[in-house]
Length: 280
Ligand SMILES: NC(=O)C1=CN([C@@H]2O[C@H](COP(=O)(O)OP(=O)(O)OC[C@H]3O[C@@H](n4cnc5c(N)ncnc54)[C@H](OP(=O)(O)O)[C@@H]3O)[C@@H](O)[C@H]2O)[C@@H](O)CC1
Ligand SMILES: Nc1ncnc2c1ncn2[C@@H]1O[C@H](COP(=O)(O)OP(=O)(O)O)[C@@H](O)[C@H]1O
Ligand SMILES: [Mg+2]
Image (cartoon, rainbow, N blue to C red; front, side):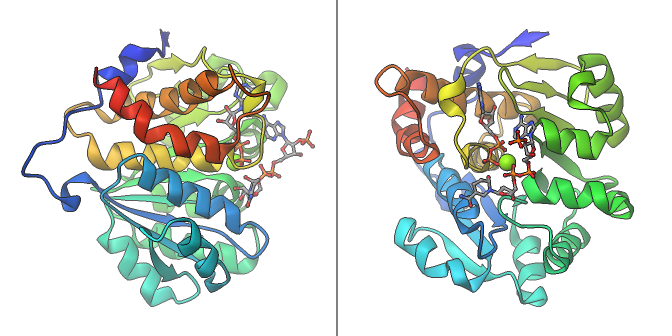
C-alpha cells in the first residue's frame, strides 16, 4: 500500500506553459445544490476554481445563483431544472462532479439520470454525496456507468449504502472486492482516507485529522479532484487523484497548527498558495 505524501503532489503539479489559455486547464461542470444544500455545490465549484480549473460551470437550482456569483463570479451557471441545458453542459465538460448537496428527491434523481445518460467515456465523472445514496437506492442506474471513467468519493455511510458492506466490516479486502466489480476508483473518506484504484492498487492518507470534521469538507474535495483531473495530463489519473486527496488534507494539517478547526473555505483559500509552493 502506498502512503500519500508531498511527493505524490510534487510529481503531478506542473509549471504552466507560457502560451497556454483557459481551455488547456479543464472544463469542469459541478452538479448539485438544492435549496437546503446550496453551500455544498458552491464549495465544490469554488474549490475547482481555486485549484486551477480553466473554466468552471455550476448546474444548480436558480435559488443558488446569487450566492454562487457573490462567492465566485468566475463560475458560469446552468439551471439544473432545465434538462436540455443540463445535457448540453454535460456534453461540453471534461470533468463532471455530481452529488454535493444534490438531495435525494424525485427531482434529484431525474438530474442524476440526465447526467449519467449524457456523460461519455472520454470524460471523468466524480460521484459524491447524495448521488451515491441515490445510486445505492436505484441500482438500475449503475448500468449507465458502464465504460465511463468514474471516481466515487463516499464517506463510510455512503460506502455502506453503495457497497452493502457495514462500516465495521469495511476492510481493504472487502472494499477492493466491491470496488473492482464497480470498475471505478473509490476514495473512501474517513480518518486516514483510503483510495482504491482501478488497477487494484491502494493508497492511504496519513495526513489530516479531526480538525477537518466540518460539513462541506468532502464537497470541497470533489472540486479539487475535478480541477486536478482537468488540468494535469502528464501524470496518470491515479496519480492525479492521489495528489488531489493529499493536498486537501495537507492544507488542513498546516492550517491546524494555528486553529482548532479548519473550515472547508479555509482550505479553498489556501489552494493557490499551496500549489505554487509545491512547484519548488
Ligand atoms: N453546507 C451544505 O450545503 C452541506 C451539504 N451537505 C450535503 O448534504 C447531503 C447529505 O450528506 P450527509 O453526509 O450530510 O448525509 P448522509 O449521507 O445521510 O450521511 C450522514 C449519515 O451517515 C452517518 N455516518 C457514518 N459514518 C460517517 C462518516 N464517516 N462520515 C459521515 N457520516 C457518517 C452519519 O452518522 P451520525 O452523524 O448520525 O453519527 C449520518 O447518519 C449531501 O448531498 C452533502 O453533499 C453536507 O456536505 C453538509 C454541508
Ligand atoms: N477525523 C478526521 N480525520 C481526517 N479527516 C477527516 C476526519 N473527519 C472528516 N475528515 C475528512 O473530511 C471529509 C468529510 O467528507 P464528507 O463526510 O463527505 O463531508 P461533507 O459531505 O459534509 O462535505 C473527508 O475528506 C474526510 O476524510
Ligand atoms: Mg459528503
